[in-house]
Image 1 (cartoon, rainbow, N blue to C red):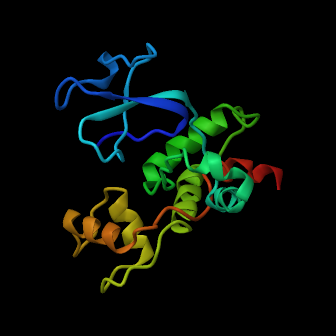
Image 2: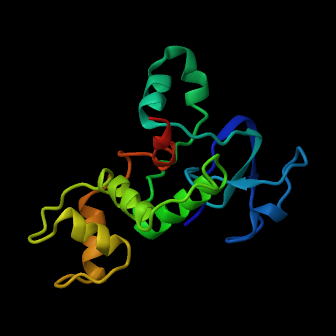
Length: 183
C-alpha cells in the first residue's frame, strides 16, 4: 500500500516516467524529488511538495484545530492519516521497556510481570467489545497478540478487525503507564 504524507505548501505536478517507477528517482522542475500522492485522481501523477510537515496529535485536539476557521487554508493542504494505538501486548511491553530505560526509573527494580499486566490493562482500554459469540475482551487481546485461543483461528482476527473499525483509536496512551510513578 502506498505511503501517504502530509503535504503543506505549493507544489507542481510531474508526470511519472513509467507505471510503478520509483518516485525518488524522479526530479520535479524545482529540482526536488517528486513524491507520489495516493489521492491524486490522475494515474501516475506525482507532486513535489514545497514543504512537508509530519505531525501527530490526539484526535480531540485535531478536531478542535479543524473546527477553527482560521486554519481552513492549512486544513485544505493536509492529508490525515489515522494511526491507532498498538493492540499487541508483546509490543506494548517493549514500548514500556524502552520508555523506562530512557527515564529516571531505569535503575529501579520492577516486579516480574508488572509491564505485561500494565500492557494488558492499557490495551484492554483500546479494544471494543465484539458481537461474536464467545469472544471476550481477554480472548480478543490474546488473539491480537498472536496467542492461540480455543475455538478461534487467525481468520477470526480479520473478522474482529473488520467489525471494530475504530479499535485502537481511543484508550490509554503508551506514554501514560511509565508516568504513573508521578501520581
